[in-house]
Image (tube, rainbow, N blue to C red):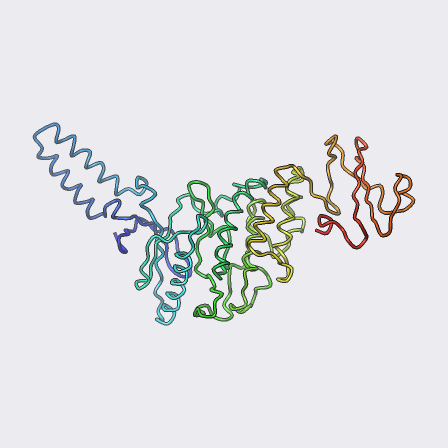
Length: 390
């Protein structure tokens, strides 16, 4: 078995543009294969020559233990890791560039201490490898139905992930490849963001490893405005767009949202889950992340955290979204829906005993089933409540 430092390869996990990834075990915790094989041989020899029943029992236990340590399924999870080994291309210049990129990945991960950012366990950048946490449950991509249609559960899992990204941004780092394939599921259900292999350091003192016009991110998950963009122009808004797409993925259970088309019929969450009132709240977040133009993406990671908290609070209180074009259930009978019957018309207002004052604007709704009436006061025509501006 190949070894890298104290790590021994158990099996191959996969590969990518930079290199190969292997499941490895910590030989200091489990013992290496040569050591275990020697123990097995010794135990067998002792059993063959043993004169007492007690010796047979003790050596039998040692034999079983040594064999178990050679079997990946019996190794303690804390003794496992995922080793990333850098490819060595034909051109040494390419290898040095890739190695420098890996150094940036290791540096970024090593300096961020957050439970939702992948931890680095060991590294040897001179030899082109490092070991990160291993999560046996795999990635979110392979468990896409876990949060499907469940806004509260999705947001509760999504929020700490955004907190981790916020720490990256505070450290002047932009991840640039946030997608379900790079998000691991920990044993305690935490979502853990890894694979910072294309992380961009927003710091003039750092060396630019990525070519100026190299593609950044993954095409189906990155914002359209970043196509062909220079690396030094990439800002944290890039990650905010990707986080929005990630949340859509978690809620929809679907693999692809083209560009920023979240309100086309085939991608509209409210059409996927027409009987779920809470799903309307997802739009409050998504409309501020998944946008066509960068100047429309006005959220930072801390702003996004605040918005997630607001929406979670509203959904848990069974609050209703108030917005033009959104059908609202009656708060009294729960059967009918509100329909507007008065909209700032002076004659209609007088019929309800109301009088317009200056530029004041009123909207009055009634339930189609029980007749319950609700009224909204806008103050004046040029100053709508925030909810009606969304």
